[in-house]
Structures are given as structure tokens and as C-alpha cells.
Amino acid sequence: MGLDTPIDFSTSEKISINTWSPKADIPVRLKLEGVGGAFLELDANTTVSNQWETLTWDFTGLTAGTDYTTVIIFFEFVPGLGGDGSTYYYDNIEVVVPLTSCITSGL
Image 1 (tube, rainbow, N blue to C red):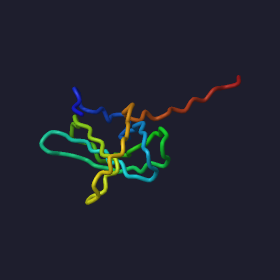
Image 2: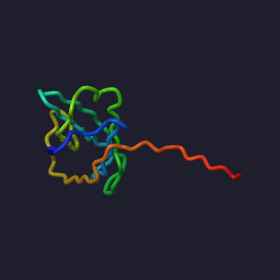
Image 3: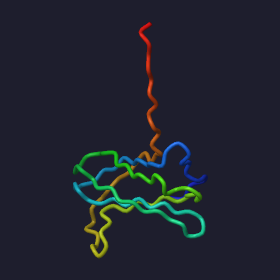
């Protein structure tokens, strides 16, 4: 999927995606492509079947100096294994925003 603007990794280098898979423990490869042929690929495995879950890919330390403008998702990415016709879904691709600490005073 082509993006209008590069992914903003200034606050976090983690990407989360809601996924639905008919099988547990299958690899999902997230590939980011940039200009000049630059790319990054990381895998995350599903943990449940026939349910939505949020998977997270941690690109920390890998994104500097490149504008990534294409996102590609491969479900059940196993070299040499042909597809079996299973249907997979994804939604809500986001850069993970880190939580900030909030300390309140009882004074």
C-alpha cells in the first residue's frame, strides 16, 4: 500500500496492526519500502485463530535516514510453502505511540 507521506518514526519505531487469521502461530511479515530500493522486513507470529489480535513489529534503530512510503503485509510467509487459500484480514495500521507517565499528587 502506497502512502502519501512517509511514515513518521519520530516518536516511536514500532508499528501495530490488528490482524485476523484462521490459524494460530503463523508468521506475518511486515515490509516497509523506501526510495532507492531501501526496505525493512520483520516477522511477527499470530497467537490465536479465528479472532482479531494486535501484532507489533519493532523497527527500533533501523529506520533512520530513510523515508518509508510503502507498506506490504504477507500472511503465512514461509519460503517454499504455497498458499492454501486461507483468508486473512488486517485493519488499523499505526505507529505505536508510547504511553507517558502521569503522576498525580494527593496534596
